[in-house]
Image 1 (cartoon, rainbow, N blue to C red):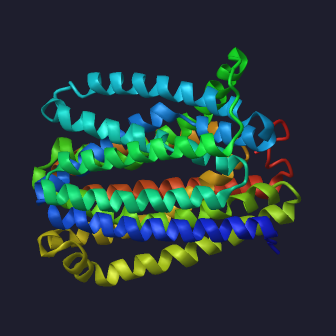
Image 2: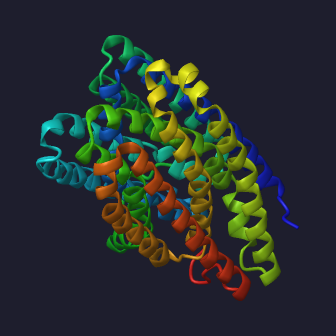
Length: 422
């Protein structure tokens, strides 16, 4: 039987409310984007956002997770950890932008260099503009972090609306989103300075810099490889299909991604339960595995059924009649939603047990399989073929992680590493 303590219940309620509000606002924002942008501009927007997400993650790595852990275990040194992690983050952001500017000069991307650089700014500010959540989540103040999330999504919706009215183009929408991220960065930094004791003199610790980078990179590489394989189908469509096909696929993929936030947010809200329960006993591990699996199926499967039955009506009402040609792609990608949610769940199990290499190996294999299988399929069958490939890869990844997680939870009491505390 899985028990939830009082603190976990409070955090769960705040996170569920925040994530539900953020998801709802995200749906409205995505609807606004789809209705205002022409199909070709929708394709350009999706290409820029999904292609540059990797560079945003590269600029952040997993430093936020390491910082939150250290803040939780040593709250008296919160300013020390925050400042060290922030300086590393700024350096990585600059290096990531430089790398993107070079990569964007390749023949396949050169024509969209300016748009990709805007997308890079969006990705970098999105992943790195939340110092407040590093601090408040680490100190157990999930309520404040959740409030910041709701404010951020509301500002994003307003910015998207203004940008769409100003100019219905991919560039204008990205500029609006970057503006919101910069506002959130300023707002978060001010909130942090008001809430914690600032040390007037910082003693720079080389060992701490090294620790943040090394441990953060272990998590960051795992997340980077995941995002690469999950977003690579957009790049395939950009490289080997027409602009119209890219627009339809990007819309279907975006709709699926927005709805995927619902089950993944629930998993994140319940992660403290996972971290405190794993490793207590073999039976506790098994109960946790089945409890989380049933929960994620209970949430994800109804979403998939609704999409399969009413995809055409949803597209016509939600996005507009011009996107109804993407109905079949959306139905196919809807099947992937279950596997994507399960894959995210079992990734959390692997992270909890610090099995980063396992996650990286699975993701790299998925990247190679997507490229090898996806390129010829994309050339012949376009978006429908790529969507089928994505479902196949996601199913393979989810099943592999499920088997590994079940085996580990059923055969080991040391699911959580004893060397470090999450």
